[in-house]
Length: 207
Ligand code: IMP
Image (cartoon, rainbow, N blue to C red; front, side, top):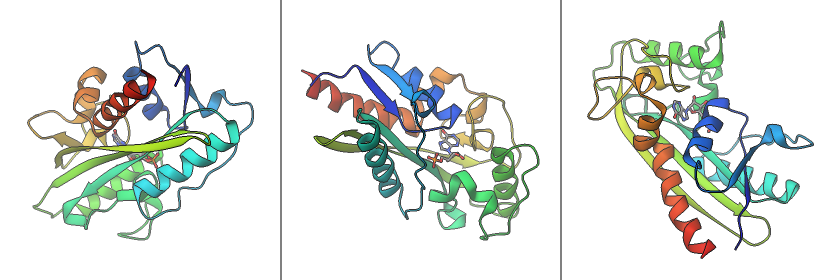
């Protein structure tokens, strides 16, 4: 199998930046939905990360007819019955725990809601989950997953990364994910782990 280009099925700039870094030096060109001539909308309306990722990979792969990587990722917080989970991107707008108004941006609104719900919680344990699906249109597909365990802080700190990074301290660290350099985050993150497993599989397929 020859693999020159892969479409990363996302419009999330933070996510795309991390995928591009993870594929640096592989010789594979990374495209995003912004590079596509025509846009199609795919709703993430499934109950699991895997189902959402498969849905996106198949829809975009079959439409654009190029190999696709689709990821569905999120944060699971033990004290909140694993919420926000598949609702991570739009947690601020979900009824669970009350809706929060978007003032500056969605990431900040999500964090505001999470910290409100975690206010009196002693158990701060949480994990990031990444499920990554590779789909080669009409031929085959496979998926990998990665986890990053840690704790939720009581206030945001750090400017790097995206999403819930400013309120998540990875296990073994004293800084939040948003205080880590991008290379360090990619080394320990859920996404970094899922993508390195995916690359192992791709290397075997390309030989
Ligand atoms: P998705 O685009 O449906 O996969 O939604 C992912 C959402 O989960 C993002 O909008 C973030 O809120 C959160 N998320 C996923 N990965 C990360 C990460 O690496 N750091 C912080 N938040 C993340």
